[in-house]
Length: 254
Image 1 (cartoon, rainbow, N blue to C red):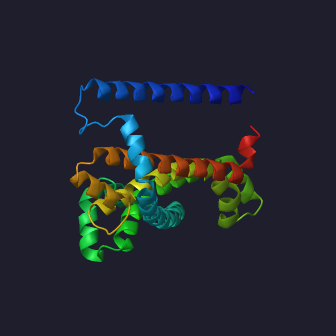
Image 2 (cartoon, one colour):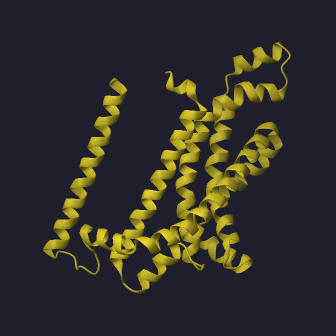
């Protein structure tokens, strides 16, 4: 009961903060402190969202398809890399620095090269999403595997358990919470990565839509698509929370 009350209170505070920001934003726009073409009011953004809703949904479908494909491949690749690096110490020493280096290169610098190499279709977008999503998964799982209870592992070894059984019953369950924490980050990164890749080349998608309305100086539509991207990211993160609760029922019992 206390946890539910705390959760409700925190949500109310967040909603109140958001309402204050929107009120201040509306006041600034109505007072003319910032030109309307530079900062449209929240009401104008809502109107733009409603008027452009069919087009936004059509472009969202493309972006979500790219994000889903890239996220699936990124999670699979990150999981395999984490398992192999945990199993083979030399592989960990060889590839861990390279994995870190991949995250130091800006995605806006990689995207044009991928478009040049693979064209304007879905392939370069999926590759970019894989690059930005596999890292949190790999690092989160590696930390989870390394924090496995050593006493429990030694107990299973004394009972004749092999590496696979130790991984199945000790390491993997112990790393689940870190995996889902990383998955939440990767889910939000997947949408952002898809939009960035669409900025630099594509035929449809929210990134392409943003480029078109920016060139037309339709900033109310720009804000509308920004809010839509945020909403999509929040929904994906909520879906990960639901999946975590289904996959880890023992956490709900605490």
